[in-house]
Length: 111
Length: 114
Image 1: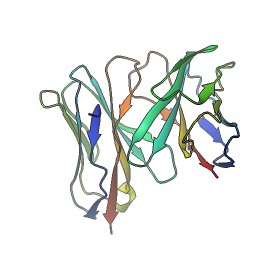
Image 2: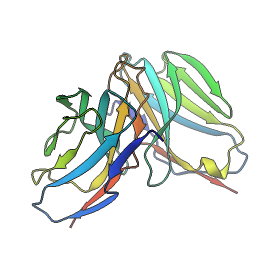
Image 3: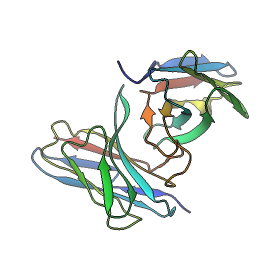
Image 4: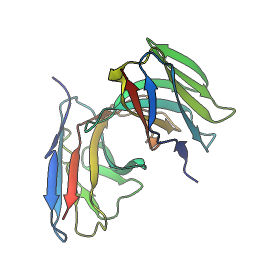
């Protein structure tokens, strides 16, 4: 079993839709939860970062962590074609520790 | 502009040849990392270094080697012992002891073995 499971998609939505991206993880010791966005042929960039459970909002993006279910989500409101990218979830156990990445979900927002 | 520079962007290699991928950063970060990305598998850690002249194996270090002689530089050598080297290689850096997850990535090097 992989430590982090993520549906690879692709997920195709019309412009303006609400997008929900999800990951599950197996180890309850994970405490830090991240979402990275990766455009085609580029390196990933950090999008959202949360510690422990709860929600975090940044503009059109909301990250949600449910540690009881070992489930993390990224919601994108009013999706734009420029949001088309691969979204990678990542988790880690300790402050400054190495990350474990999900496989990434390919998102396509059609105009 | 501060950032991470990887070179070359594209590289072709014949079987049996070693190849070295360059990674340079001017962010003054202590920690540097090499990841490998394959379709459907996400990023897998090859090696990481938290300080000059010290580095640790990641999850898939076999067939790879690194050095960290300068803070700014963390080159990766893909040796002929790596059985399936064709992949997208990403270098990253972070503040040592900084919040987990704040990695800064380069634009990657795509290696193809012919």
